[in-house]
Image (tube, rainbow, N blue to C red; front, side, top):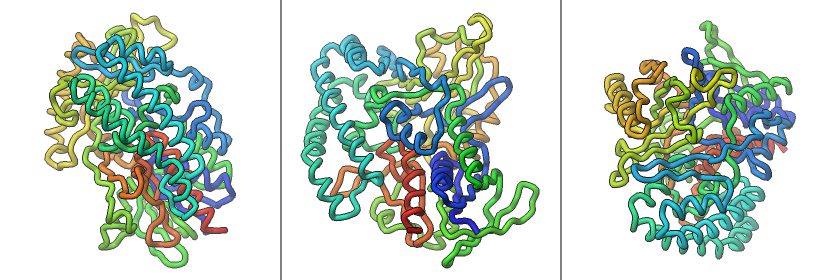
Length: 480
């Protein structure tokens, strides 16, 4: 019997399993796809999730979790990309540098009429981000749960009120210029899982991602998946990739029935279980009840958009030399961002061992489509892919004619079949009493817990690392 069964493909599930094993729990991780965060297509390597990796810099929570797991970052991660990312509009390009003075100068050049207001915004946001990060370090579940935590919350409430008042005023500034407004909306799309959190106190933490540090390394999230699996197995845990979930029987212990890739049935049991909120099997343990926790009834995490990613290979020479690794492209500043008006690009580094004239680069182009079955048919996605390439041509001349690799059918399969790894866009309302959209890891079952980015959508990419650790801690506390 295992102390902990973890069911999920996402990064948060892998963090939960590794963290629990590191702290002495006999742990089994069941990854239904076993795909991890990387895909090799043709001669090109692609990250499945194009969100920038934040929180892995010095003094950041993600790095702290890896240090607790004794997982060092690869050497290439020490080279922080600058700019961290770019926003491309028809008449503007904003480079988001990790240097505050350079970042402010960039905005002063592109939007000189709003220089004073933007400088004031960054001063306010940096202060709020620091307060929120300190809050997360001491209150990892973010939402206050106890009387003492509410007392602590009251101490920072004046800062929250100040931020909300200031951001409302800044939002009025944004409404005066469509391009400037789209810059902030595009940042939120690039950094956040939550569509409507600009007024959240935690949004400052996300908008400060370039200043906190955005990491880039060629293997992307795959390094994290591999390192966490290695940590789990080094602590006598077991990793089962591509095992199908058949049934769960819940009592004082949890009995699982699984199907191996060869069709054989495996039965196992555990004292506790962690489910990813992205697991397709989660509804099966809910029975006829829609909500697994009371807070979910009041504040459901509703999925509004899923990412569709087209994986392309191109000559490095056809891309601008100053192109960042992550880019948010907004073709029309007058349209809603999610009305076919946003493209997220992630590019790889050119091949080191070849001159630029013959080097190649992988390009992942992501759009967000409504959770509507008619938009996700094979025919509709083929049309979406062709439209996506045509739209990229406007910002990247001669891009279309230089495509070396394109497999639209494979791109469609990945986008549909691996939603357990790739993060959608959620609509999560903030609770009435606080400014945090964080949700509980607990369920109505005392030995079943949740993990996943949607539980801490306030924290952006960092949410996957933090949520995974928090769920493991819930189990550890349960056993004391």
